[in-house]
Length: 164
Image (cartoon, rainbow, N blue to C red; front, side, top):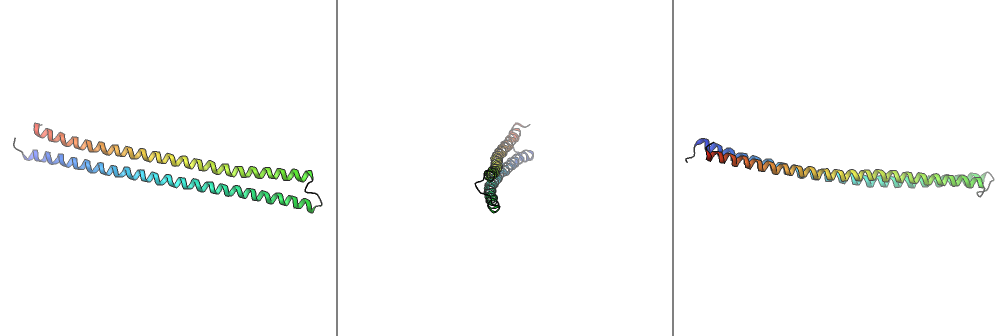
């Protein structure tokens, strides 16, 4: 069978389709790599924010303790200046309540920061998972594009030889 101009064009079209499919698949694989790296970076930023949140919470807890100690010291100083005794039951009761309030404020500061940090870490895990899934989907799409392009090329080649 002699090759006609139409057959040559069909063959060129099949080859071009295969090349185009290969280029499209390569672009989709690059996009998959980018998505994965982007997600990893975003997850890393969230992890850093979680650590910063914990540090801020620890500092707030330490400040709550310091402020409470100042308040207790002032209570004792005022009691002593007024001629009372630091061991007076009323003074001891006030100091004890202040200590309890200080412990509560410290616990609230720590809990709040730990809770926010936990949420940030969970977001980081979710972002990593989504990035991996997006990358896998894009990679699969690239493979499908490549296979589809080659199948189209083979189909054109087959129809060229069968005359359809």
